[in-house]
Image (tube, rainbow, N blue to C red; front, side):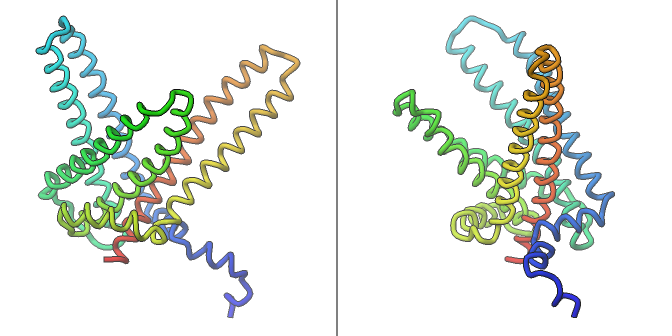
Length: 269
């Protein structure tokens, strides 16, 4: 009887996948906290690998020869494969915590090697697409390249985001590498309605934050325009705060969306 008095739009919002995932995350703060911790550990590992690579790169400075180019390619390949392994390791653990939100789990690293192989395959596919797109951009007049780049980059990144999350969720729920890749591309290009909400949330949030920061920046310029030094100092702090707030909010949406994607695949086996 109570639901009859609630507006239909309110019911739709309450029953949306994002809200359900948010409530699930909110009711399991310890597990979500550990997910955030492993994300931070991944970022720390990337930074550490970057610093180590800089150290070795300085010692590898040699004249431009075929040997030096080969060494550079091999070194770069090892570097990116190591980062991809670190990503695979921490994401594998995070997937286990996501799974534990829906059922009892006991983590096992038996399939970590296969999960790493899955990520290498996905990275290879999208690198090849990016390589072909680069040739396309090279054939376009320079004045049009930025517009074509944006036109290509936005759907490229969105589909990459969707395919990575669907393939990871599928694999962790028992699919083979081949099945996970096929399922991710099939859903990404033929069943957009299933994951449409997860993408719209990100786009709408990004637009809302951009409008908020743009309006706040304009207000700062209006109020502090008479004092140029005050304007510069205020705007510098505002810019730093905006970046931090945007990154935090966007990360939280990505975190909730991971749960949403896992739930989507769980419901559409």
